[in-house]
Amino acid sequence: MEVFEYFPVWDKLTSEQQNTLSRSALRRSVKAGSLIYGGEKECLGLLLVSSGRLRAYIFSEDGREITLYRLVERDICLFSASCMINSIQFAISIEAEKDTEFWLIPPDMYKKVMEDSAPLSNYTNQVMADRFSEVMWLIEQIMWKSVDRRLAGFLLEESALEESRMLMITHEKIANHMGTAREVVTRMLKYFQNEGLVALSRGKIEILDEKRLTEYAGK
Amino acid sequence: MEVFEYFPVWDKLTSEQQNTLSRSALRRSVKAGSLIYGGEKECLGLLLVSSGRLRAYIFSEDGREITLYRLVERDICLFSASCMINSIQFAISIEAEKDTEFWLIPPDMYKKVMEDSAPLSNYTNQVMADRFSEVMWLIEQIMWKSVDRRLAGFLLEESALEESRMLMITHEKIANHMGTAREVVTRMLKYFQNEGLVALSRGKIEILDEKRLTEYAGK
Image (cartoon, rainbow over all chains, first blue to last red; front, side, top):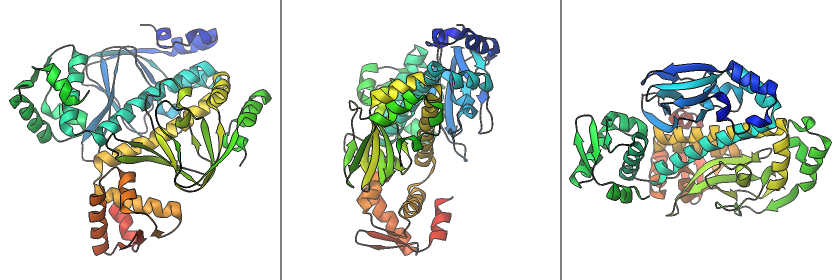
């Protein structure tokens, strides 16, 4: 995908603005497992994901994690360019979950165009509102849903993302996504196995009964 | 406060845009306890708080609540005009915690100006990023902090907002702010009382030892 394909408002930019964005964009590719962005002081730029998958997450002082959202092909990551917007006062980290290719637009270049272009600024607003909606969904999950239901939902989401009923993921990783302890995940998974919903083997979880798991997740 | 005082970018609007905003703004005043906004389908407009205090919160199907943030004098509420931004896919409720006066700018009027004005759109982005930062702070509190520390922090925040060490608030209300059960709040408050941090009486909580409460909150 080319840079212009990420912006439905591209036609509303001047050719100078189009040039600023497309000429400044850098092509990057990272291996699965790489930390792309982390910490408050960094300001990498706008990420436009071409292929692969990124995970945005936060972590506590004692090393616990929770996934905020995932970014896949066609997604734009705004918070890796948080210096562009003064009011952003939180730090997220971004890692590659798969080998990932993306465009990187330097923050000063993007900011320059956004400050002059109402269409681009309004579109940026939409992107932020998208992420805001995902984070609000997460709060509702954490607040109102029990861990077993959230785990059922996570397994289904993971299965949809991977397009497979066989998930190659450790209990530790699931715990980091959900912001809970590994022991809790292991206990719940064993319960799901006893109920015939999943089959467990080392580093693998097979979804056996998607229908009942979906009911369980309360979707 | 007049409408223009809420917008640091006012001078960057055309006089036509300034007129659209200031002429369409409606003066409203509501009593403490009023529900101003609630539900997904509503789209009231942009709220500019002149005096008093509003509370933005979400609630679960079984009636539990958690406070997202408070809005006081000079604050702008964007999510009461969520129809302006298509990507907002969550519903918040807003109630008046005190008698409150505000300006209301109808969503279609604000949207019209924002779509044409890069400065106003960029400023709206800042307002959203402010709220996003508050919600991210909340997630970190929920995820990494124990309920007792959050309660200590809540009492201090409430004391600062009310400019008083004597808080007129029920345990039930505190539970609704924090998204926890009343019993949990009551138990923690009794523990705080035993430790000499607060004194409890019917419908009142007096802060006795702000210094130790602050240490407790881990600030």
